[in-house]
Image (cartoon, rainbow, N blue to C red; front, side, top):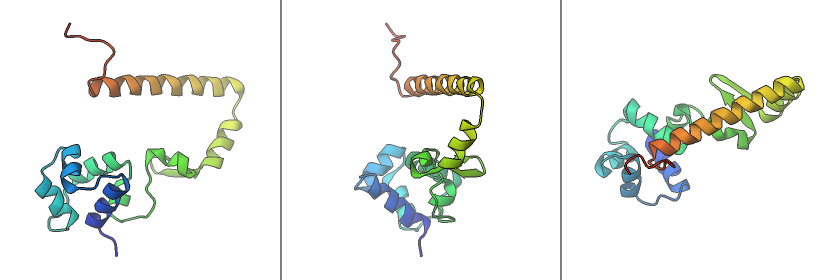
Length: 136
């Protein structure tokens, strides 16, 4: 039977992070705390579960062993698309898009590109990789 600690270890190793210390550093936690979570010595609080789910790009339900479906936003690559509580196959998603008029498809594509670019810019800014050097 799987548990949250085992699932954290499995995900960490699958990402090539060999040590608890390295993982703790990457998520901004103390090694002993993360080690206690992995060994199920301490119950993982919701804020840590959220941090781990975001780091591993999996759903909280997957991380806490409530499901074996990872449910991440990148699951499109795995043949599924998840929108909140809705889970559909990639084929259903593409069929729904295909049924739209060319005008609506163009509008959707424009919105997706704009949102993607805004997300990239926000991510770069948050990570200190802004193209603008505001300190010069």
